[in-house]
Image 1 (spheres, rainbow, N blue to C red):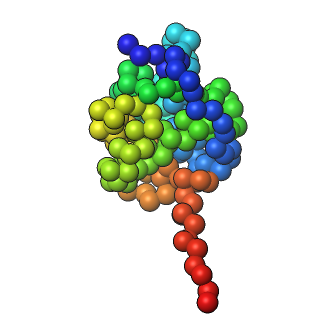
Image 2: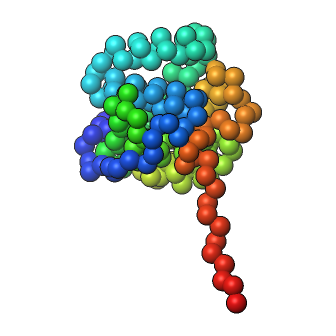
Image 3: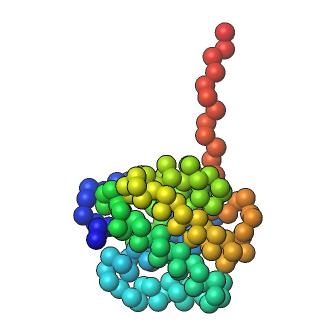
Length: 173
């Protein structure tokens, strides 16, 4: 099995967590908790993630979200093209790989399946991009339903996730 930590990594910081909306910060924290538990073999971190989610959305929704998280992380763990970096749970910055994961979740959840597969290819081997995109859609759907944000266009938004691409430059003659 491929480890999350045995190839050269993509490092750097994309933004601060303050730029993200509440749901996106919650999801980022959940991903960090799950990755920390996996990397450190620390079930206590997973228990905290479970408790946080149950308090926020109830057991049934929390269970669906954690099934989605586990599937999402499992595909990355088994098929990563390089080491996947994540920041400590309380960190106020969003790392590059964390940003790719959030963008993938947003694209999958918005119905942009081609964009989701292209984004997934930044994390996993091309033959696993579809699996990761489908796992991202499952996680996005469970999380949106659990937080009551299903159908909300601003779900998983804020900061760089919401910015439109700059307009193409125009030449004035």
